[in-house]
Image (cartoon, rainbow, N blue to C red):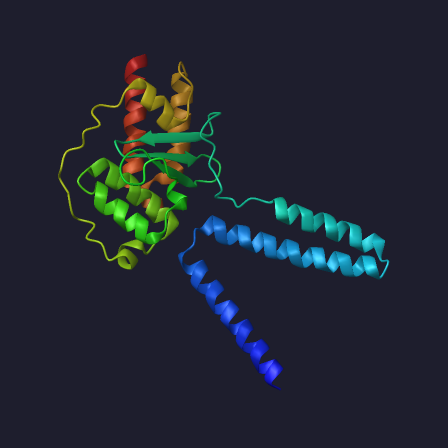
Length: 232
């Protein structure tokens, strides 16, 4: 009886600790763990079938297990090149929007967390980063666009005054043509038709009326204006 009670306690403790970890972990890490757990279960089932000499079933199950171990989460990385990703930079951050999935990934360019991917930062570190860059409106707005995608209730969860720093000027200056091409995910020399098509496609992803980011929508509109003005 004690053995069953102990086993039940250990199982409950394990699930509780896993739930605590999942609540604060990156979504991509949670997804990756889920794939590996499923892969492990399928692998054990495949071994069981092999012992029973049910090769016809065991082999495809083993192949599925291998595929789950090698699978990457949908948010494991947006394409920063090849015209399928839009990149926006500020003094403190760089963000890339994946055109296919709408996933936003980011990297810190300056400060305490310089060089780190935003997905690798814990919630406490993101709060610290937000506080560190709050006086730079563009960087703060870009970080908030990322947070909106990572955790919709981050404003309440972080207990942060999101109005702090409003109205302070950004140091980024006017958008250059090179930046405009990066924002729209286009190569230099793109035609007017390509610019308009890229703008329309991206606005469907980030338009505020669709729950997207006002900051990114503003950047995309500015990029279109810069490039069309150049062609005009």
